[in-house]
Image (cartoon, rainbow, N blue to C red; front, side):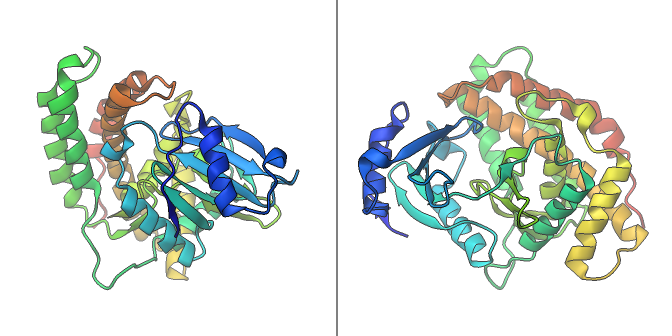
Length: 336
């Protein structure tokens, strides 16, 4: 993948984007280039550049958010992008530049919380996740990234952010105890370590109705992790991001149907009730870790991000939900 020594200004993306377009699409006339800004992302800034009305050939220019290298390993992201592309699960990566990357636009509609609960769509999502979970980059399976990342985020919060934390956020000592509890409790569940997306919120799922398939985008957090974390994290995203409503968390029947689709896609045969039940327990327990992970993430973003989003409020919502569901989730029995 070519790497250009161009830096694109966060607050004035267009000039830098056009310099990149001159390299990537030299036949485009600069005065004919149209642009469209996507405002859904809360980590990066994203601009589409194209000349045709239908955006058939369109270059997406993504500029990394302020200090996001604290949260994301950018070299790893490029490797994951190429790995997923090699398995037919990602668009083309055109280039990287000093503070971002350019890639192919995926045709289709970015989903919302109202879509991902529809059975015909959640079946496609379960099948695509099952496909990604079978990717192996190398012979031996690496360790899950969850504990290393969560520990790093916690250390950042403790060392750099805790003095300025609002009273609504649990004390650092409490966070430390919870992190230790999560690691001890969840590490014993025997959830397989697989290649995960790790950030499957609605807007990272593109549905192409013509082809009848979904594609996952944005691989910043992708990497080897617990299978149950990836699914539990996605179930948490049923609640939405801008307006968070946990009454939309999928009911048991929805989850069981989703997990059955997933397991059958992975195995190629029917899943037994015990297998579904076991995955159901693992997923709901790992959904706790997802709340904790994104709450820590939001505290760091609150400190450094220039994107207009109430990260502190989001952190408080995720911590509150964590403590609310912890008793019932801890009580879930793993089937023998």
